[in-house]
View 1 (tube, rainbow, N blue to C red):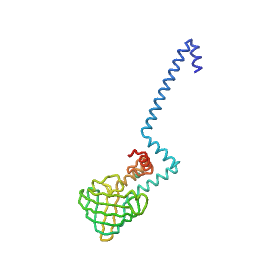
View 2 (tube, helix red, strand yellow):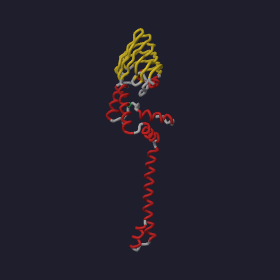
View 3 (tube, rainbow, N blue to C red):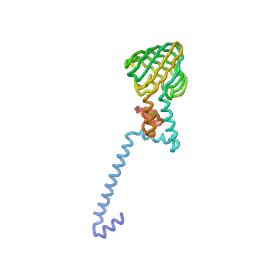
View 4 (cartoon, rainbow, N blue to C red):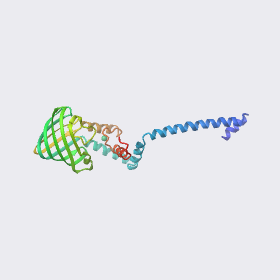
Length: 237
Ligand SMILES: [Ca+2]
């Protein structure tokens, strides 16, 4: 400020005028700065949950090594998610062949206990199931109650009656995703089921090649944290 005034005086101009112009420039710069900061802040404020997710994720997994560990764990779980496999004990009969929900064939009635895994969820669950159909017209009546296993298995409590094709997608508890390929068979007291999920395979590959940026199934550590926070704040997704 002072050197400018001296320069102005040495040029024989009025101090007030130069001072006014100087202040004016500064005022303009201040205004632009304020507007820019405001725009930046309002940009962040448009999704406060995301900011909080970043903060909490950093707090829970500080440093490069921790984040790398989480990334490997997420990829492992994504890979496990590709396979659904269980053995069944109970009563009934049935057979089903699935090559996506658009191409199925089968019939059955079953009431029993399953032991195995539904992706990253492992343990035992009771299941009753009535199913029959051909092609895309496949009717299912299913009720599943987890009884013992990993905590993730408790997300798989499920009940649905209707066309298999019209099941809600994106929910891991459902009978299967539209793209699943697999088969199951039950006879008298025992049964087995095996299926693979191409969608989970795509999720694994996408998470691997994008270093975890893309999470199609919304099931990585960071996505789960975001879901938790949104639920806490009642914002849903
Ligand atoms: Ca994933």
